[in-house]
Each structure stands twice: as structure tokens, then as C-alpha cells.
Image 1 (cartoon, helix red, strand yellow):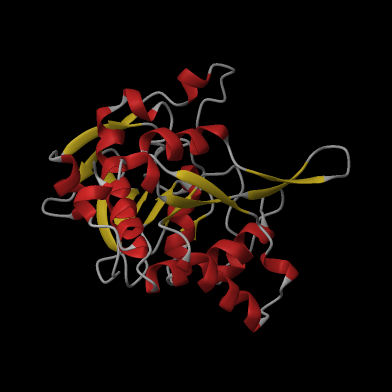
Image 2 (spheres, rainbow, N blue to C red):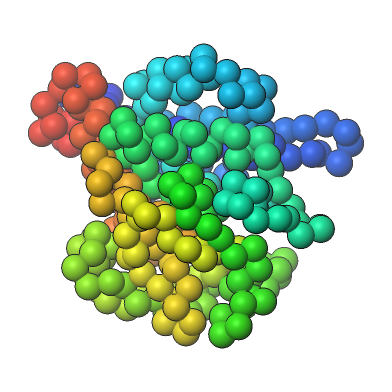
Length: 272
């Protein structure tokens, strides 16, 4: 069996956005889709932000579990929106962009993804969602916290400028990320306003910003499957970035292993 016949199925989280004409779209940035296809070798399956439609209905959780049973991985995307602060016991500030439909979908999805051992890779907002879903909290405006740098992007019309590396991170020695990268210090991009305040009890610190100690990566040590979250954006031109490809390769291997197990195919054949 060749590799393409066992292409893993990876769920990709979507946002709910107003289109400026009174309508709403479930959206996923093309860079995430392309990273799933090209860096992971997966067939991406978009997960719409539909949690509020079910409003805590038990059938929704059962449906999430059935969805996860058919997936080989979950990729949580970044977004301009912020996790609503009521999920971690704080009040939102006026003018802050939120996406309650995404929160209502991804927060339970994260917990069930981890519980069922489905490989989980979270990026930017995705990291923040993982931290909140597991009981942690966030800074709504990292740049206003004393001693922290401004982690927001420059908002240039040139995406290469916005996604250019801006600061180094200190990778925790002996951690999951250290094992994947083989390096203690790497340079990453930075495009976020909110960030981790209190780390979730189940989360393990994997990297911090060298300049201010802001959390840049975390893992879930007791997860039965791959579970890693990064604050930066490895998906941008991932194939051109060796650091990004090391992380995506690890996620891809975990997804292929799950796909092989689900289909009863020997892992050696799945990797051919």
C-alpha cells in the first residue's frame, strides 16, 4: 500500500466570520489547509464553528466523539479573534474581537481529542484554546503586561513582513519540543495579542520567549496521543522552514500511525 492510499484525515478548526454584507461564513485560512495537505500529507476536513447550535446538548458531545473516531488528527488554527474571557473567569474589554461559536466548538473538542488519544496540534489561538480548555487562563493584551514585549504583527500589506521571525524562544531542555527540534534556541514569528497567563494544570511548559518569558509552547504529558501547542505560526511557508517541518513531521507521523491502526494496516506499509 503506498502512502497516498493511507493519507490521514485531519480535522481543521474553522472560525465564524461576518462577511460585511449581513451574512456569515465558516472560514479557514488557506495556509492552514496547505500545511495540512503538504506538510502533513493529510486530507483536511473542516470543522465548522457550530457549537452554539447545540447549547450543551448531550448528543453534541456524542457526535464529537463519533467525529473524532473517524479522524487521524486535529489541527487547531490561529485567528484574529480571542477566546472569550468568561471561560477563564475574567471580563472582556470593549472592542475585543471574539468568536463564541468557535469557543463553543473547540473547547469541548480539545478535551475529547485528548481523551481519545487523537493527535492534536494547536497553533496560536489554538494554543490559547488548549490552555483554557484544560483550566488555564490568558492575558487579553500581552503588550500591556509590565515587562512583556509587543507580540502583535506589524500589519504590513506584505505577508512576508508580518510572518517574518521576530524573536528567539528558549526551548525547555528535555521536553517534547526539545526532542523534536534538537535545539534549545530557535527564532520564530509573532502575531498575537493575547497569550498564556496561568498555565493549565495538565500542561507542561515547552518554550518561552527569550525576551520576556511569555509562553511560546506547551504540551500535555498525560495525553495518550500526540498533543503539542505552539504560540507562533509554523504553518506559514512551512515547507521552507526546517524548524516548522520538524514539528509538522512529528504530527504527521502520529496521524499516519493512527490512520494505520484504524484501518488495520501495518505501520511499515503505511509509511511506504
